[in-house]
Image (cartoon, rainbow, N blue to C red; front, side, top):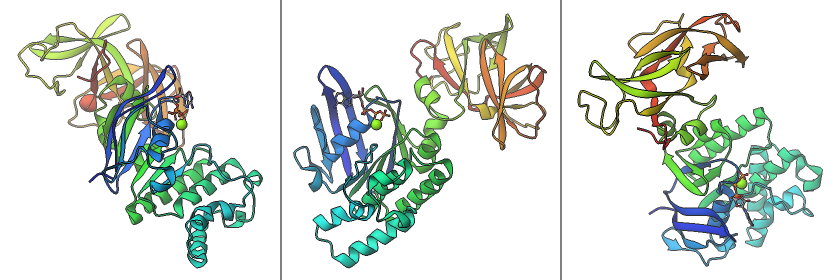
Length: 376
Ligand SMILES: Nc1ncnc2c1ncn2[C@@H]1O[C@H](COP(=O)(O)OP(=O)(O)OP(=O)(O)O)[C@@H](O)[C@H]1O
Ligand SMILES: [Mg+2]
């Protein structure tokens, strides 16, 4: 039985519809990551699950029981808020152990739990301070501590690492992953961070404008985004999009775009169009129909490297911008009237303005309808 379900959940604040028919089912031990642009309703959804906000319509079920009218404290949920929500007059120690005191957990057990999370979160030296005497990142860790001393049915995390520096963030990410494994905890986790979403999630739900637009395993979303919105949202640097049209050539579909004023054809007959190939353009597609081809930067590489077997093309392109991160370099080319970002080894010598041989591996492309932005 799922630990958490939301059924036909709606929420409006006055005239504004913030959640529109949210249906989710989360099994024990799942790590569901919610991503989506600011204001799409992630925190509102978490707040309704926690019981801090009431739904306008629909149900929340925990362990199969409707909990719409159950008080937050009786839902057996631990939540870390985006805004920390620490008790300002209490020390860190009291903040963390408050819930256990309320539930009359014996002192010894409280003390053990406190030490365990303080160590985990590297806040042992802060236990006697008040929240006002802490940095943003330290407050955030205390808020985590308050949740992690518990063993609830469900953890809700609302951007719990957003204020930590990169190193601590990576470290905490590792800790959370370990924790999830060790405890088999069930977690719903909101983040803006790609790496966090990809590396923590067993499933990712992408939200847009109050709806879940795609739900699936991280790699599935990455490889087979169902829309341009998801394709653009998952992955960094973002997927490249090339506008063009589908045409039949020698009974094979090709994708034709305009580059430097001339038509340029990219082979797409290997693509799974989902319909039968009837000798012309496939399925519902019209000849000449406008499509958008998506290709991730890691499939745009230096032509100097060795590639075998893939469906691929090479072009001489002029780099207009480059950005290195030590490990690899992201090179921007002008291609078919748009920017094409490639991922090159940092060892590769590339110069802005000097033409470079660029290799496009087309084996993992995505094709979208230009009008609906939906994947083919
Ligand atoms: N109490 C409220 N009254 C009116 N509108 C609200 C209220 N709380 C949230 N909203 C609106 O609901 C929408 C969703 O807000 P929510 O906080 O759920 O977004 P979010 O996805 O968590 O965004 P972020 O990534 O910025 O945290 C926003 O447009 C917000 O302005
Ligand atoms: Mg939020």
